[in-house]
Image (cartoon, rainbow, N blue to C red; front, side, top):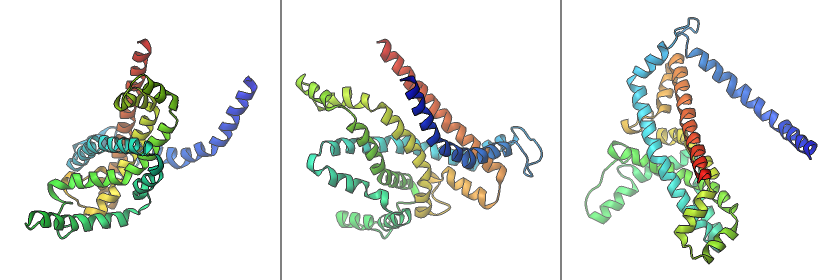
Length: 291
């Protein structure tokens, strides 16, 4: 039995080795060079210590972009998780219409970002469909550009949620399909309602899925730059000026030191957040185990 297990581990390692080598060559080595450059001067020859980090932190554009990115994550991620989980519950219990709902909700995943942004521009521009609908309903003239001003942030958040709901929906459904139906049957026999079954069976059983959905949602949130750029251009409204906009401007000026330093700060912040979250989950499991 032990030899068979070791053989399986060796086989799995053999298949995973090309993937690990690819990550090391195409991600690990370049990021190592980025980390090295974050401590060097503009010519990449003189060690300057934390001077680059201080310069980036004092940069007003960086603080604006970092604050907007954190604001977007704090608002859009919980909204996406709630909407996708709620729709997953509806689709999971839809019965015969389940496949139709899956296709309709995952359709935004296959639409190219450029085409999607064009549709949203037609819908949200001053002469767009939304203003025409509001003018028809209120009998007043509407010329609001929803991509700029106070509504810009919510327009981008809505675009992000609409684009990624179907992806997270599939992940939730995959986790729900692994929950034994006998648990739900036993809960019904004991008189548990729908909310009780969700609280005491579905949510505890989806802890691993929840971590995966959260991680992938955060990763996909950094790709919202495509939609922000296509909707509002390189210089969008101040509320949706994100980290990728800043990197794009620094790339045009070839400011390697600032890009490298900001990338190191960003990666450290992301890993730190996930480390805190993992520690919290581990601590909650220990507490539950003690109980």
